[in-house]
Image (cartoon, rainbow, N blue to C red; front, side, top):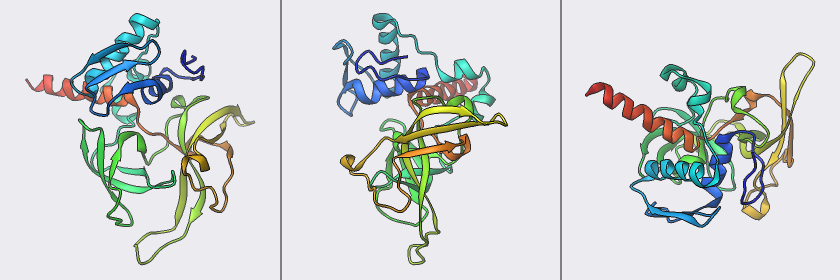
Length: 249
């Protein structure tokens, strides 16, 4: 599908919806009033992010004939499968978090503020700075399923390494970066191979002089990626929570 605002193309409804919310949905961070920049209407007040997302979904369907099915609706009908496929981290999960220069490093989730969509984390190297992370700036440290990946999908991919620092208690590791899949091929044994590019550059404040930097990545497998949660994950998490609460009444 194609964004009617900027003509960007997307393989999945989830990636398209994430793009609309992040790049074309105006308003304040407090989610008091939001307006659709596709048509400069749908200016309304919402009580929290969850109600905003539901209202905007209805607006896309009613005014733009864009029907967005949730990821759970198209991949699973069971809570067990949803839980196994989830991308929204919870306290105790191991994650990769953005830290300066558009790089991502290892951390553990401590708490989640659903109203602010913000996690409080602990870095592996015990750095006291930058511990409040927006939900779009981290990813579970586990590979996505192949059915979650398509041309245009936003991913984290590894490129380059960093050394150990005994004073900080940091082990050597690989550098993770934000990227986008641009093509998919299948090799002779039936494995899918993914190619893509960095989505952030020097103009965005990204450090691009580390050893091993290349604008492109090639022949990656799905196990080489991590994926940040998106608005669908927030909605499904709230649905699941409300369902559990209802079951307990």
